[in-house]
Image 1 (cartoon, one colour):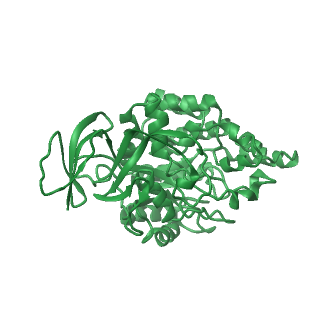
Image 2: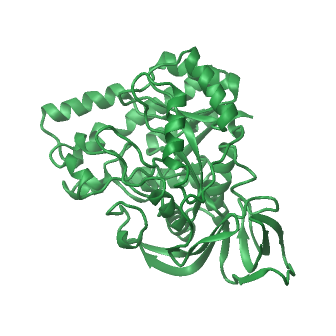
Image 3: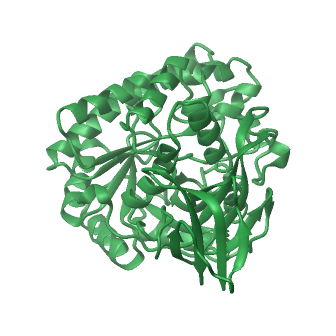
Length: 463
């Protein structure tokens, strides 16, 4: 099957060019100023923008947190992703049962996703509790056999790794070309402050950000960067950077010349702030870790994107229902499941709040949503770019059209959006996955199970 997209503007990480795009058998065949293909199905996309299908490198579908599960599974969550212009996700695995080794969750996550996902997908492995020779043997096997070339560790939560094991992991990662992604928060600071909240009966949502201050993030970012540097610049990827304090540690590492690390932020830290916690009930919607920060933090993160200091914008999509699951924290914010929806809102928010408002350029949008995630996570040039030979994952945007974000018109299972009522300029018209239309005018047209599992190559941060 051949499809011709004519008269659109193709956006890359470096420029915007008027061009036609010819798709054949799910692959981009040609991109040039004028293509004549009378046998192809013609789509005139004049006045519209053509972006590569976005890659969300940080989602939590069907996440088991012990006392409940995320309300989006690999079907509903990937439908929402597709409708938001995301054609590939890389999902972070949940902690396995205590004592389990890395292969356990790989098998578990295939059982959750295979036959359910509607877009292409891969996983980040998870490291927990310990770092021994069996752990290292398994991550090498998983990288070779499954194409899972990134593994996540945590500096907080019950099955976190302590510094000695973290350093051992980084040294192994350096030897084996494995990328380590890390949740950076200081566990001691957080648990001390959360315990004090309990003693002092400060248990409303307003105390959530106070119990996880920006300094706790900054200390952990600093520690991880120095440990990676000490491990002969082991490849490192810092997830969901939320604060100016944490950003200063990133800038310091860049200034001293440290390489082989990447940094992610998320739309919530660019668009929202901690005033959402002021309402004791509504504030539960924004209970996430790290928490929302101050307006000054948002400004600093936007400036970092403008100046190419950060590398990606992902979502940390981890949704729970407000009327049911989130109410667990109504009398004690510490009992509220941590996380919020956002996989569908990401691309429109970055386009509207970033590009339209002049904070970043359109090529930068593509760099942070498409190209850099593909390169960092071993998917480039199959994904993340509109070039001959790449998968025909394409998002067509009407740049002049506007809409208002309403949870009722979103496609995930969460019953709210943190962005409810925000007006967006730049509306997704059509989404192609490997040459097939899977979204048109906010209607999902794809099929359950059509997503393909992606075996990934070595991260660009390893090179």
